[in-house]
Amino acid sequence: MDLLKPGDRLGLAVSGGADSVALLRLFLELRPALGIVLAVVHFNHKLRGTQSDDDETFVATLAREHKLQFHLSSGAVAAEAAAHRLSTEAAAREMRYEFFRQLEQPNPDGASPLDKIATGHTLDDQAETVLMRTIRGTGTRGLSGIHPSVEMKDENDEPCGGVIRPLLVTRRREIERYLRDIGQPWREDSTNRDLKFTRNRVRHILLPLVERDFNPSIADGLAELAEIARGEEDYWENELSGWIGTAIHWSEPDWSQPHSKEPQGLVQLHSFNPEVQKRLQEPGPMVMNASIDLVWLFSEPLAVQRRAVKAVGDLAGFPLEFKHVEEILRFAEDEKSNGKQLSLPMGWKVVRELEALMFLTPDLRTQERIPTDYEYPLPLPGRAIVPEVGIVVEAARVQKGPETAEYNPDRLLHPSLVSKELAVRNWRPGDRFWPVHTKSPKKVKELLQERHITGPERRLWPVVTCGDEIVWVRGFPGPASLEPKSEEGILIRELPLEDE
Image (cartoon, rainbow, N blue to C red; front, side, top):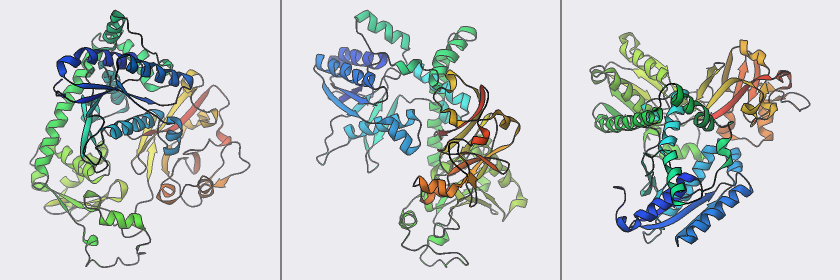
């Protein structure tokens, strides 16, 4: 318990499940030796009706029995997920961690209710996370999985405590055995057995299969892989800090200078556009160009080259996939590319000069230079990353049944799409779509207006096309013309773009 010191006020995040209840009982035993003050923290996600309320009552009773302070909050996670177009799991995590942040936030006197919060994540959770990310595709950052500790920051981006996961090296079955031995009951979350959720299929089907038929120590192996990946990431983070200012440089673009000339033939945005004004005035990479010294870049191993290029995207706020990084490196290596440029996500460009590779931020003064159009191929089955709106669009063949029970039948499309080429792009003027159960086709612009979707969000709204036909519009049911007539269908859905 190196992360704790005597006198720390530790909040135990208790959901009522075995892992969190074991966390509570173990810290009650360790409290005299550690010299810490314990409290119980519970967030009611309001996802399972009376079951969620019963969990809350169970946890409140535990806190009362052990004479611990009880911090409680709740939120309508399903509504939050729908409003912000997040997965239920992502919305629940954001709301839960916002509650944690509030509990660690200092008041004007510098005091806060809690110094740290502990969660009951186990080695099994770690193994599931690493395996899921591997299946989806990830780099070493994604393989680092669930971290043993996470620093929390306040509204001013200042450290204000953290979250620790002391059970991350412990198997779930060992935790349940411990609770049975001491006669401590716990609550079972019924949704943990629901196979419509990816994690549950990994937990109850995939991991047991691999453990039984291939490697009985797979969970330990995946947890060790996460530990190795975290060490690798720590090393590269330290390396990166040395590159900044020596091989990677940031500079203000010419157009941000007071003396810069008005762009010719473009509509100037003035003070009536507060968002652009705000971004122009903010310091940092969002309005900064970057350059990488070419002599240094190609004197380094390939691993360093890839890390340096990706670091520019990470720091500037535009995501670079592996294919982008490789294309940039090929472009940089070719001396015939001098003076030429490549287009990158979110309106960025990269230009090869004689001695440096220049990454140019979009000119935020003009509407025309704020990126609006994008288009990516969507394999079937497969996924397309859409960094402009921060999502992944997935297309898959499915059979009607338990696997698709969570999806409205209106969201499934005819299997004839299997033989077609799909693409995901933002809608364009003139695009029309005819959602099922409506009287006639409408312009996509009108459909979005009816939903009160406005501004940049509307300009970037994603659709999936098959040739010239739009077959999917984010947030709308599928077209009547593609309603599946059999037990097989095509599912197109959006997933959150994870930070990997």
